[in-house]
Length: 351
Ligand SMILES: Nc1ncnc2c1ncn2[C@@H]1O[C@H](COP(=O)(O)OP(=O)(O)OP(=O)(O)O)[C@@H](O)[C@H]1O
Image 1 (spheres, helix red, strand yellow):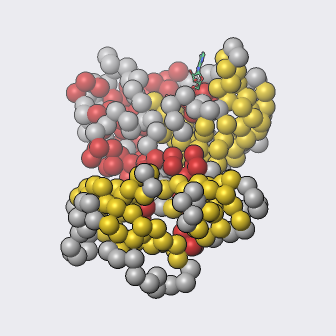
Image 2 (cartoon, rainbow, N blue to C red; image 1 turned 135 degrees about the vertical axis):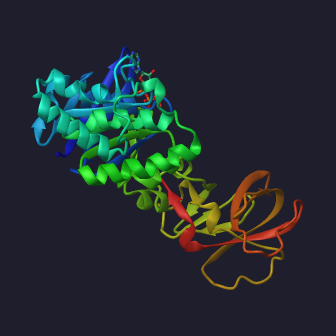
């Protein structure tokens, strides 16, 4: 296994910067989620780690070795793509064995290693089938077995689950994580799906327009987004803008919101509040704890989702969002005037 280090990497297509000065350490044996909107540079970065493309500036090292001059076949990388790219005329066994046969691995060893990989991805008994005789989830497992049978140092996954329907995808997320843990392989996982990135990754990097916006463990980014983009891209967030005075943001309507940390004085800035941190009360009433923020709002929409209720609220013409657990109490009606309360601790200053 190996750590992957990307340092100051840039890649230009004509005048367009697909990646700009990106530096990330992908820890040895870790599961790293690369997240970002379409066109943010995720696939470009993955292709350069694999050796299909090369940086215009910066360096990439695998296991401490600079791979700039190493072609794809010498990088010991396993890859799984969204469309699996299995050979349709080959059996499951031969698809998985392909990488070993091109490396000249002996027949007996090939059989042993393919059988092990088949067991690992739980496809025992299906070795003779062709890809078209498999379900989407099974094809995905073949692609995964084929990627790990060559014992790569690094596993690169480019939206490998996006072709699966939701319930299958959730099952495969758990499987993929189990297999990754069992093999202990350094894994870099590209996804559009923020929930998938949050649940699966040990660390997450958010790319935006070719730059690394923020990176760290999922809970750390979720609880401490550094920017409005990170706050709204990873999870939901209510954003409030105003002028700053110490820990306080003065909103246009005169309301003061207290942030958990200070910002430079006099600047215009924003703070974020996660919808699940907001409590809804029917009357203004006294705020029970001192370190609370509050706002009057009106419920414009109530969305029932079984275990929770999403409320959309109007405040000063802006739409806010609050999540409430379905605890069995009577929900608020659409049109109701309410007061929103949340802790100062939940009010995150953004840069
Ligand atoms: N070969 C190429 N020639 C020209 N432009 C390219 C090429 N490859 C990528 N780009 C551009 O570089 C940017 C980053 O593309 P990339 O495929 O890395 O994004 P992505 O984050 O993986 O997007 P998606 O989530 O849609 O797959 C995009 O603006 C894309 O159009």
